Image (cartoon, rainbow, N blue to C red):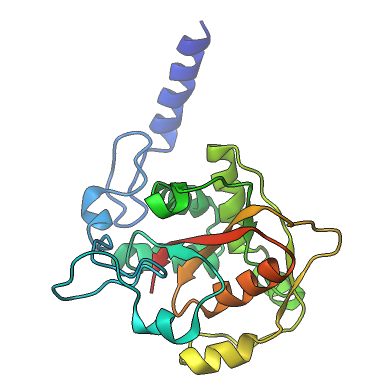
Length: 241
């Protein structure tokens, strides 16, 4: 009887609210949010790529390597896993979620994070909790929600791993979009701090954010967590810019 009622509710839902691709708007089977054609506009990151930041390498290379970007600065995180390029429809969906307040897209974007979780670099050791990259209170009021926290909470429900809001953003910073790598690092210096009463000592943590560009934000967050005694800090993002 319970299954019958559930099927009836789903049928009525599809009748009044038919499934459509959130990218192109074309009708889809129930539960399908993004059609194969729209998914294909955002290429998957495939080997060879940097084992530290997932930056792909267009050339002939065998085995693991570390890109010049990571060799130059020695990131505080163990690795960042991004399974897709921030291109095509996926890039648009991230913008709609982040700036257009289309909050329902968090479930779809969390699927990309769940795929990143399957990477051997993430699966290599225990995970105690997810740590979302925080927003400054001013920006949080402007945006209405923290996209990284929303994604972490959605992923938490799928994985049953807890979310630790262990970081805070104490200094308001200019948007990173127009800065190069060096300017991003300078802009973020001392912007993050450990939240009061947050204990990360001995924990294996996974930072969560929407897009990886240069890795400066994740690096600064990992620095704080490492200084507070975290055993390891890995990171996942929906996509890589």
